[in-house]
Amino acid sequence: MKRLRRFAADSLVQQATPSSRLLLYLEWILVIYVLITIPLVVKVSSASEILLLPQILLIAAFGAMGLKVPTQRRRNKIAYTLLEFGIIFLPSLLSPRFLPMSLLGLVILIRSFRMFGQLGRIVVVVVTPILALLTLFLRNPAIGLVVRAGGQVSSIESEQFDNIVFLLRLLSAFPIGLILAFGLLLINSLQAESQSREKLATAHNQLRQYALRIEDQATLQERNRIAREIHDAVGHALTAQSIQLENALLFLQTDPDKARAFLTEARQLGTQALREVRQSVATLRSNPLLGQNLSEAIATLVRDFQATTAIAPDCNIHLPRSLPPEISNAIYRIFQEALTNIAKHANATQVTLSLQESDTVIHFLVNDNGKGFNPDQNTTGFGLQGIQERIVALGGELNLVSQPGCGCLMIGQIPQPKLPL
Image (cartoon, rainbow, N blue to C red; front, side, top):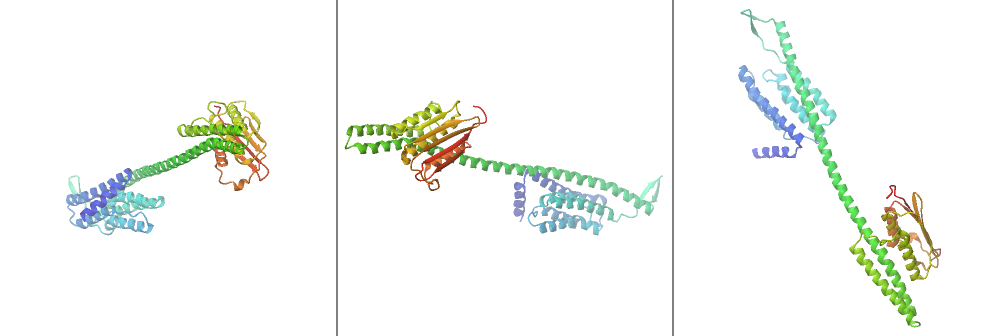
C-alpha cells in the first residue's frame, strides 16, 4: 500500500509542468504546516477538550485527496470540492472542540485551478474566504477572561469582552484575506505561465509537423522537376531520332545514301540523348540554356526542329531585357516540349511561336495546324502536365484550345517578378 501511494505521488510530480509542480509542493507544505501547528497549539494552550486525533486524521485525509484530483466530469469535481469544504470548515463550525483550519482554504484554491474553468474558480475564490470568516466569527469565545489593572484582578464585563473578541477576530480576518489574495495572485500567475508553456509546446509540435509536411512537399516537387527535366530533354532528342529512323527505313531501298544520312543523324541524336541523360543525372540543377540567353536558345531549338521535321516555324520573339533564370528555364522547357509534341503527334505543316513581354506579364503562344486532339481526353501525357506545372509554379496561367482536325493553340502568361533581379 505504501509503495502504491509513493508511486502515485511520484507519477503526479513527474507529469506536472514546472508551475504545476510548484503549486503541488506549496499544497503539501501547507498541509504539513497545519499538521505540525495544531498539536503545538493544543499543547501550548493546554486545551484538553480539543479532539486532536480526529482533527489530524481529517487533515491527513484532506492531504491524501490531492493525489487524485478529478479533471473529467463536472459532477465529480463539484462533489470533490464540497467534500474539501466539509473537511476543512464544517468540524470547527459545528463543534468548538475542533480548531479552525482556514489556512487550508488556500489548498482548495490551488486544487480548484487544476479542476475548474474561469467560472468555477471564481466561485471557489468567493466561497473560501466567506467560510473562513464564518469559522472565525461564529465560534463561541472562552468565558472567564481575567486581566490585571492597577495591580488588581478584575473580570471584564460581558459586553466589553464581546467587543474585544470581535475586534481581535476582525484583526485576524485581515491576514487570512491577505493570504488568500496573495495565493490567488500567485496561482493566477503560475496558471498563466503553465498555459503559456502548453501553448508554446503545442505551437512547437505544429511547427515540426508543418516542417515535415513542407519537407515532403519539397521532395515531391523535386521529384516532379527531375521527371520533367528528363522527359523534356531526353524526350525531345528521342522523338527526333525516331523520325530520322523512320526516314531511313523509307529510303533504305530506293536511296541508300540518303538513308545513310538519316541514320547518321539518328546516331547523333542518340548521342545527344545519352548526353542529356548524363547531364540530368549528374547536374539536375544545371541551366538547360547552356550559357545562352533565352532568345538564342529558342533559335537553336527552332533550327533543330526545322532540321528534323522540315518545318520552318514562324517566330516572333521579343525580349528587350533578360529574364530571371527560373523563368527563362521554364519558358525554354515549355517551347521544347511543345515542339516535341508537334513533331511527334501533330502532323502539322505550319507552326507559330510567339514570346512577348511587358512590364508586368510575359506572354507566349504556340500554334500549329496539325490534326489536333481533345484536351479533356488527354490525361496521360506527362508533357502537357509538365508544362502546366511549370506555369503554375511561377504563378502563371495556361489556356489550351484544340479539337480533332483543327490544330492546337496554346496561350500562356507568366507574371514578371516584383523585384528586379
